[in-house]
Image 1 (spheres, helix red, strand yellow):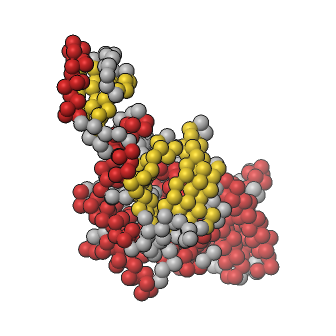
Image 2: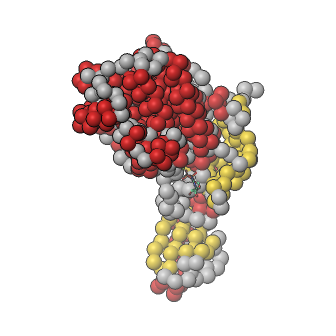
Image 3: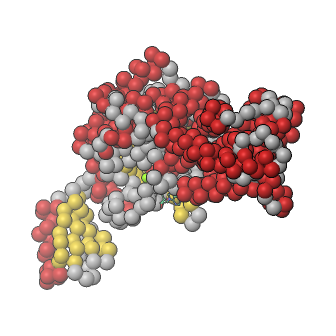
Length: 313
Length: 257
Ligand SMILES: Nc1ncnc2c1ncn2[C@@H]1O[C@H](COP(=O)(O)OP(=O)(O)O)[C@@H](O)[C@H]1O
Ligand SMILES: [Mg+2]
């Protein structure tokens, strides 16, 4: 059996009192894309940073293409292309010079270097921007350059941390297309994001991380199938009333009704509510999606921006 | 350690320097102006000390060169802070470049600049201020290299102790002036009080000036500057040890543009 591109076991990391990773297991098989989904502060950047040796783990193992990345980060890096969360390009250099420097650091030279630069810049639509200074590019163009750098040298494992932060629609589409193409050509990608919609567009296997723990993984279809149907969410002024005869969870002023058929269930909900309907503030139907999966697993709505997070330093 | 990776980084640093010649000009123009200003005064002082034929360039040229090479030392640290500001530091670390590759790649260009700056200042001193170097040029070069190394490693030690680029600048520039003052670069050491002269021995600048003046005025050769050169290398070793102990590769520094 060929080893996975990335195998993480029981990975732990704390920053003082804050537990960033609380025993994470995660595997990225060769040639697969894994969408690592989690709200801000879930631990995605910490995980990615440990894999490429930028931060130290407290416990656990990390293997990159069979290499113990914690013991021998230098060898592991030979297989990794990282696009960090923070945009990191040399603003005083042209697009070409940026690609050239990082290509050379990958060990690429002459014709090989040139063809790699051409390949990644074509994939990320940078070909017409080669002589522009990176500092003078638009936000989306910078993001594309930033990502292109990670693809130089055809690394086996590509780590993309919040690749679409601040990206325009064109860039986002280009990035998602690139990830799919990479997988098609046998690369493995760990794509971290806090956007639900993005993992859905990737059509990849999803690993959901929350508070430093993996809470679910699988294909989107299976995850949704395994975690109930739609949810009708009722928000009240003040404390929520008790609804009998329905599959509900109550959270202060919020009642969530689990149902296979929300349209039909409405009648029963309002019948059960009776007079209490006066206190109703809003009603929302949440169709089966990663959103309902997250809600089911954590009891919280998926609010990526909820915990105001310092951009991971 | 891979020379090819270091070389890629060196070329990249040199290009950045080349794109921003303003600061380099400052490193040459300012000391030249100071040399012109100080020369007559130093001439009188040297003559009073018994160097009858001295015109003042003998003190002004090495003195100002020694003072201004300090700023090149802080420049070395600045290039690290800049990487943090651009968020490229983590990218370099996550690349296949090793720690030595990165250190050599970033420091070799600054070391070259420091040496080139001093060589240029001595050459311009000869051309513009009638500096006469009586002793051996090889001996002079030994001091130039030893002192550049000492000031560069001093800059790196302060870099490793600073969290912000403002701290780095403040400390290195302050130290540069203090070193130059008590080390006999800003004014001839002989005019300073006794206790300052003894304190001066604890600065690299004192030993550099000792070597320079020995070569320029007293015609010293290689054998005569072995001691100051070794002392300068000793300073470099101490500063490098501080850097090695304190430099945190994973630390995120604050760079304010
Ligand atoms: N350098 C750090 N020092 C202290 N706490 C940190 C640091 N980096 C991240 N954290 C904390 O660790 C947790 C996980 O952060 P992070 O890995 O950046 O999550 P994500 O990338 O999913 O947003 C958060 O609570 C965050 O505040
Ligand atoms: Mg993050």
